[in-house]
Image 1: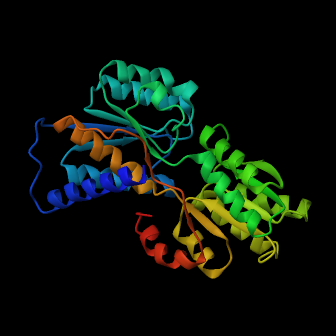
Image 2: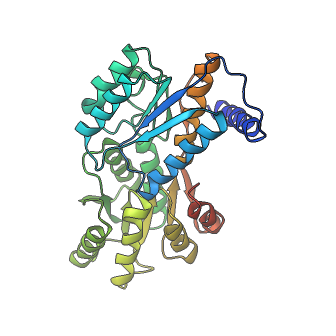
Length: 317
């Protein structure tokens, strides 16, 4: 799989180079339109990077792309967006699948209508069953387990897993995998995606239980950064390890400064970029990779963090 992933990245880069040089691919189909429907708003720091990848792939491939998402985490609204996309008969559809029960019928309609579907970010375990050609993302349970093992290795014995999007199956899988890898006592701290609420709830958890030595956040900008601040405000830097899924420039700086342990990079830019490249090549040439593409996980520790900060600030990492 690693070899397949490397080969596809090389091919995608070559296509991007050709387009950037001003030599467009010999298209077998004009006016190619690809629609992306995700559960994450482009205003979210994480999803803004996904959208950047989508937009760049559209430019590199010379196709029209349209990124859509509900205003909040709303599966009914997301299903309606997928249905509306199907009615427009695009050359390809990219979807995230945080809840297969809520979105399954809409995705199946797209497949039944002959629209090639690629899933990204969430839904790797259900993607094929719904008819998607492949999935671009990371295995969330395995990524959580890897994070838990690392934090256990760092001496952790009691942890909270901060879930800022209750109902998102992928986030549940992250916490479950983390609990297995960590091995110690783990409780889930449910919040909204309001950083102020997360700051308050993490501080309250630390104040109520002095044995907590680990905080696992599931998103860097929304949850990781306020979790770091909560540990600082509580005077527990050096006593409580904070780690997060995904990246933000500020959280990476905290890692570089020694105020946080690590961040888990799933390379969400590729989650937006690669499906558009694949669907454009499918529309033009009938080409499609033969399997899922793992975009992560990669642990960004203190040794690596400083190198990634600038790219994160630019909306690429």
